[in-house]
Image (cartoon, rainbow, N blue to C red):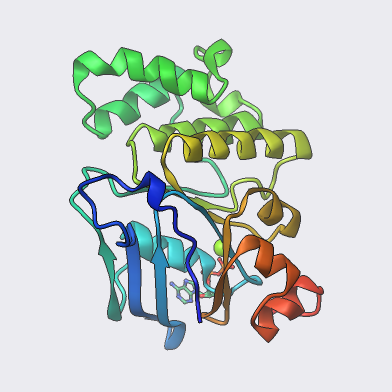
Length: 249
Ligand SMILES: Nc1ncnc2c1ncn2[C@@H]1O[C@H](COP(=O)(O)OP(=O)(O)O)[C@@H](O)[C@H]1O
Ligand SMILES: [Mg+2]
């Protein structure tokens, strides 16, 4: 049985201690005459870093888009707890930044997310610091290195103060140093109380940052397992095959 990792210590006092921050119930998504996600049941709890793994085409990105509300399932539903102003923010593999300075990108986000005007300068400084971008604030965003652009994409998403930060292979095209900086940033957001849902097919990365692993294969959820257990002894034959380098599709 799937076993979500919980962290009741980080649950706000007015919330039910055991309510997931978001859950998918029997989510099925079809397109082009194919069933791409098939009856996904998934409970995500605040306080932990969830890794979504699975081979190419498994349905990982679709899962994030459904959580974000960019897509609607044909059947089943995505259920959020509470009435937070911002539920989730999604960061893609390739940054999509405005042709403006680093600071202007963040100011634009703070305005789009309706952060009250008197708070924006303070939030801007916090976000620049969080992304280690203070020294680059006046640089054109699109001339930054890939790693710097991705750090900006992540802190721009954090401008929304989302309950859940969804990251879709954010380091797939970065070198090890830039990847380490992204992982540090994600861990910082986690320490600040943001729920992390991170798609990667890098097993080393999943080991470094994951508290639990959700393994998806061919549009189905094979298992949801605490990370130490997952890497020691996955429960599904699909995940075992993937970790051994046998499962490619
Ligand atoms: N709009 C669409 N129409 C048809 N097929 C799609 C559509 N979006 C995604 N797919 C297919 O769904 C499968 C899962 O896609 P995706 O979630 O992007 O996989 P991944 O796990 O690699 O992120 C893939 O086979 C992809 O080609
Ligand atoms: Mg994908």
